Length: 295
Image 1 (tube, rainbow, N blue to C red):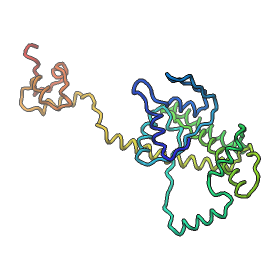
Image 2 (image 1 turned 90 degrees about the vertical axis):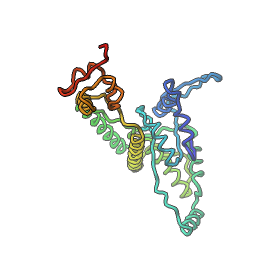
Image 3 (image 1 turned 120 degrees about the vertical axis):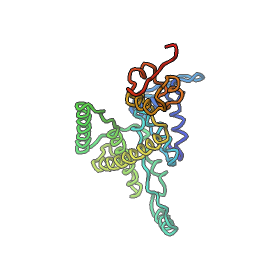
């Protein structure tokens, strides 16, 4: 799924009915994991999605709606971990550099990404299996062992274990870079490419590690920024008053005689829920806390 403005697509998928449902969050998580999914509509027959179905949502978005999407994705269900977010350095070219770039593109065999993606589609009409080279497999194994050690150390020390889909994203990005690079190189050199090599090299894996790490860093910065903005806009949490708070409120209350009714109506707002038992139990020596006349 490719969209120039991806906000509307994701927003509709993530919209739920409050406590009734959570939109298509669970469906998106299942598609990412390659699980089989089925759903039905009231006016249509049941639809089934087979396992290991290739699925990708790709698009661009403005910064303001991106903050809203991140807030919806970051709800603790791990959906945000399944997305890569990148903010490119989009410098505006000068007229001279734009003209030079157009002239250079005219001299190439490939004029647009449409040619590349069209060839990729034609080559992958029949499903093809891909594997990592021996060296690339060793790197993936080392990353998995390191991540498992981090989880075990966190559990042993009583901390929250880390959660991440980084290794899955790296493997998928490596395959995408492998396919895209092979097809683009063949088109630029004018070679006929009957099939894509099935082995993903270590160079493509290292390129994926670099790109995914960069995207994860930007996603972390944006997520923290959104959390700071949201937390500053919310009212501070109200905590139950402590014994010290009640004593301070009684001492600062005007007059030597403090009645329960006066304290409930004119005392500090955070202490107006104080019960008679709390007041008569912890009152200071210089303050008399009197309840209702009939008590």
